[in-house]
Length: 132
Ligand code: HEM
Image 1: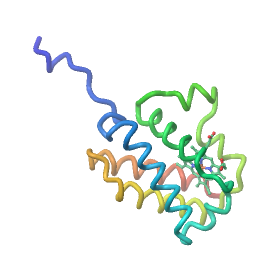
Image 2: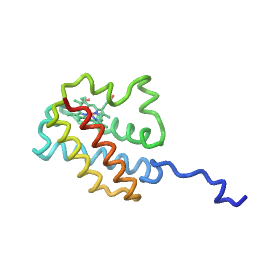
Image 3: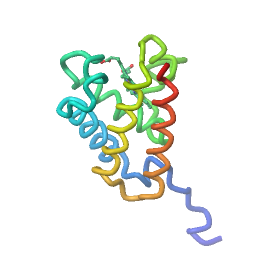
Image 4: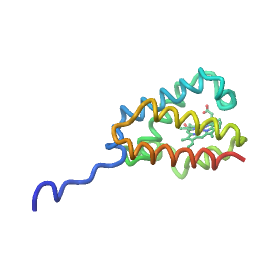
């Protein structure tokens, strides 16, 4: 058997650029939320210091995309939907979140563009499903 035939396929996490991409996405996303009035509803729902949530988002994205699962092991039995069920998220806020993430992924441009589009779509669907 050749080496290529037994090689383990790369995870989406690896194909998207690993921790560097997830950290860049989290940083860009909350910077947009912080600075662009178009996302004011989302900003208003968060505390003054976005540093902890930035780290949390980067860690979540790593585990969610098939990388290190620290975010999930630190929160046994929790998922994004159950965590957000505690908040009253309007459809407008959900759309703001999805639009800011869409812009973020365009700005960061992870190396595998096709996979980045899939990520964009899945995160948008997840955010819009939280609006009610
Ligand atoms: C795919 C969609 C979403 C993802 C991946 C996401 C990500 C996160 C993360 C990682 C946390 C921190 C949880 C923790 O550390 O345990 C969080 C908390 C929070 N999210 Fe989201 N979120 C999403 C959608 C939304 C939407 C649509 C809103 C509406 C504004 C929202 C508002 C909040 C609020 C209010 C908190 C808690 C406040 C805080 O910790 O500052 N999220 N979210």
